[in-house]
Image (tube, rainbow, N blue to C red):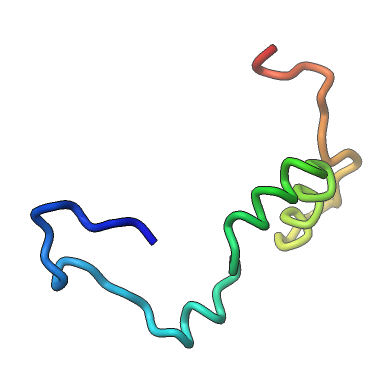
Length: 69
């Protein structure tokens, strides 16, 4: 968890309940990040499956013209 700013008081922060934390969609940022690096196409396919589509995509990742080389 991030450390509070030096001049911040405890009342300046909201800490969710244990129940809320355990039911979040992203339980571990580190695990999610690792999966996105190890298998980007699979990662984004899983994210896209969470959305409603009029027509399903043909290709998850198009690397033919990347923005940064």
